[in-house]
Image (cartoon, rainbow, N blue to C red):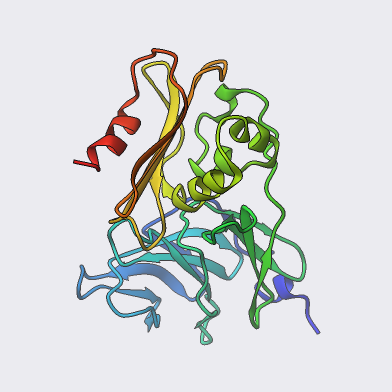
Length: 263
């Protein structure tokens, strides 16, 4: 039996690592045709069977004849779901659909499989989950809580909001001022969000719970040496909850947005 990635002609096509509106494949141009609600995804002349009502379509990763397709129904409740497309001339086909609603992901591969890892959306679950594809089916593998290896607050700049709050090496830091149950709530809520960036002396980002952004929102913020820290969560049923100590530093915009949800 041919090895999986040999069978998808890894040797002939380049590896692409960024989202694109269209991608050239051996089976023709992969692209979105039309505008919502009459849009559709095509590879060459073949229309792809994506779910009804998809608003956004992109092609974030290509490896040989395999093309990763990201799609969304709009809004911020579930910014991304995924499917692999085999762009083989005369035999275009899709894998089963997969994803956790996170739009933050990493792709790895070997001669047998290609894997997409992303944050889990399950309360109290491990921080990451990996979807392993062997050309026939997708297998979901829960991962250990990620350890990015970031040793300083500034090292989190540019990382997704879910990463510092879910990192195994930083768990003790957050547990020093909030309970394990509260930390689990923060991990549950801070899944669909933005990357950590500086604002008023804080490294900060915000996010919400997949499929429930209408009723959840939160933010984390840390000053440069980590001595001042805020975790702010809002849920429609419980209102705003705060942990940490801002030490008199003016609050960042993200935390202000959490308070604004209570009005």
